[in-house]
Image 1 (cartoon, one colour):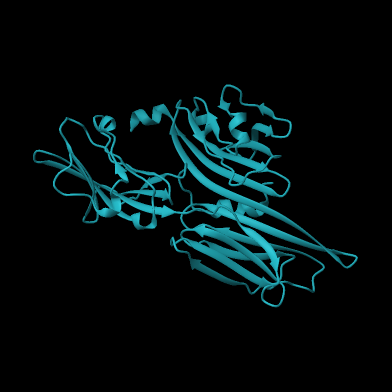
Image 2 (image 1 turned 90 degrees about the horizontal axis):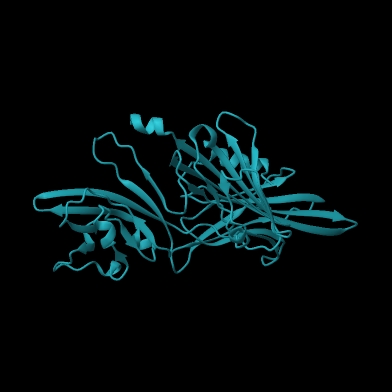
Length: 359
């Protein structure tokens, strides 16, 4: 678990924020209010943030380019047909200065730049949100096929957006000439298929297919090993996935570090480790063995893991009253079973109260 190849990919990856609702600010030099970017999951609900200082009686309008998305109170103009029945703003939250838009069942057509307009009398404030829509990788299949008249090793994944990047390697290294096809389906999501000719002059070889998502920091790695013993070819597979995220939080505030396994298995082990910033010595936080249903927590009172939830494939870790000096660093969750592994690496930055008071 935690192979060197996966760690190299993680270190080279672009850090993004967590919880499959990813929001960050883009720095601008023009002096304008920076846009907020939000990545929404395909077919899932998504929140577009918008806040203001409430005084009562504000009018709220959301636009996508020039199309009306939502308005409160409702006027004579009606929302674009694309958004009818799919948008809402909480009246309770509105009274607190939160005009965030709930966009339901996100599709590729929802990508674009949105404007939140808050108006009262002659005062008007605007903010902008750029929406990306992503369909993440859920699985990668690696197999030997004979459909083309000769034997090929095929790597495939379905229903991904944007189209992911596919690369091949072998152990021991060989010269490869793969052919990759990325075809959009009826929903606009990509079905990807990459093939290369099976190497018949090798008695022991491992084929490795790596699939990287384009928006988020998600990597899948599938390997197929062929070993020839007494003219009999033995084949074994290993599928592994890696997700790299970043979390920022305030000192003393409980929060959850995500680790959701993209596949279901019965017998597996889970290990959480932590490496303090500035060091290279990981320490074990907790472990879980599903077969024995045994949870061992070395950070009792500082971190919490729900064994029942872990059984359902969610190994997310809850940090309790984290401190900047003690909890800022890299957290790694590794879930492994017989032929599969999943690794989540999260860079956590805890802002100290002393720092916040000087800002």
